[in-house]
Length: 276
Image (tube, rainbow, N blue to C red; front, side, top):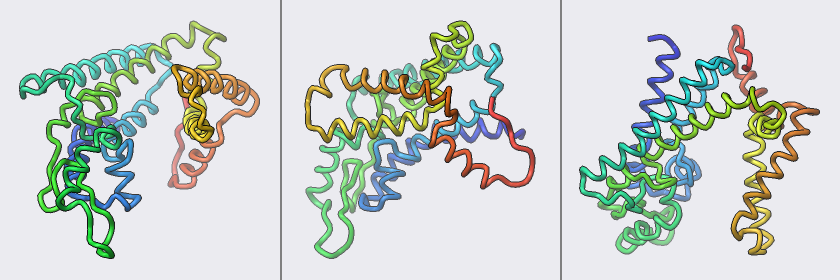
């Protein structure tokens, strides 16, 4: 199998199996104090669930993104993935007799309010280890340590941040469609989209910076920063104002530069691909 086809196959398999592995893993591995387990299974964006999205990004990044044909292909693929993901999830839930707006989740959102019921359900009987017996054990799937429960209904959820296969595929489709529309528009919009292009070129650094900004706003304890669209507009406008001159006068973002150097240090012998 050619390398591109193999990569696409691995990415597709990860999108399908990742959420299932997360749902099963949450009901079996209860050591939330372990940072690796937390990042892979219990974090806001479980690594296993979203690894398929990362792989799709790597596949897209190797495409000739200057070609209009590729833009149209990405747009069609994104629309199809969105319909299959969200539409398929709704149809499957209907076939199983589940309400389309069920708040049951299996992935990302279960670390928030959705976890409260599940965690307390297990904690009542076997959720806490005896003193000195090891880490605190909290089943995430609604069962107990002795009899773990898997949130199978959550695997069909289409709610935002559910982390189910339909939601992940649908969200990925929307992202691909937005990317394609941006690529199709960029050449025609000229200087008007310069801030957007700058933010996109420094995406990793901007993303990390916005987390720091939100943390700083939380630390102030001033509720006005979190009312309505205030914080969002602050981050969006600030990203454009900082990224545009940075991209023009400095070039690569600090985190992008770090990742590039790290990646090149791990490269074996042979030609390196040039960025598009």
